[in-house]
Image 1 (cartoon, rainbow, N blue to C red):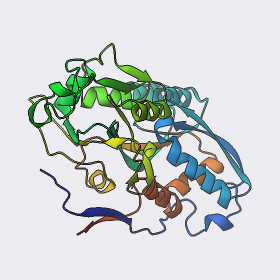
Image 2 (image 1 turned 90 degrees about the vertical axis):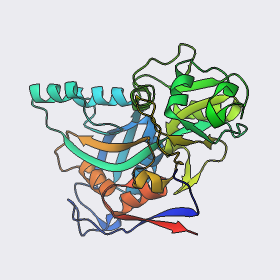
Image 3 (image 1 turned 180 degrees about the horizontal axis):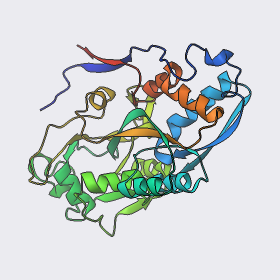
Image 4 (image 1 turned 45 degrees about the horizontal axis):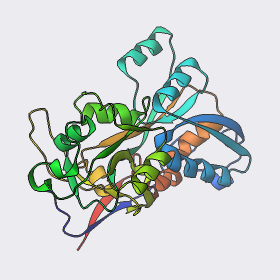
Length: 313
């Protein structure tokens, strides 16, 4: 089993990348890519970190204005495909069907991965459980296991009470990803409680000692690897279709970076805007030093800047 013998920190070994605006300091830039306004679509799962990004970009570039429209994942893709919004930041790549649409209508899209994120399995701090495997979670969210006491193995009778599963709404990447990865495409139980926003998910778990849910790490990170203590993320072990289980791994930047945490995904910036405007400046900012440092400090793993994992004894 993967155990944490000491602490881990993730350090960004940041360098200034050669991007569209390389060699310029964002606070001193005065060009078409930092002057003007643009509207972008932001995945609700990533809205906390992207707000920090856009706020910092506008602070450094006083003549820029970025308006963020926060929606679910699938809503954003519909807006992008229809041309209603030209730049989106979201939690998945195009599906095969969406790629066919792009090819059919000859729509060109710039694609960049800006970060790696993780999905936290969260319970109320009163819950004494510390870990769950995919098989146990599948039984919980499909309604096969309805009481905490009825978990199997060394989780049996650790905690008692009727389980209250909370799930992300349809059209959210988290809803589809969790169903495919953990539930093995089985349907959610009809009595699972649907949360329309991440804020609602957090509030439900904070106030329900029998609750369990899942949420983007973006929403539970205070700073870097410091997590919100009003909810409790569990250690997670993957299990394949045969029931073979892996190691229990805690939710931590280091384990997302080395990809040992089993519930991770990439954050994409997708744009069909090829004008030299503020959207280009923002994308360059996200991928360069300043933007990637915000990614690191928001609990996610930077994509374009080197990082190193240090164990603290």
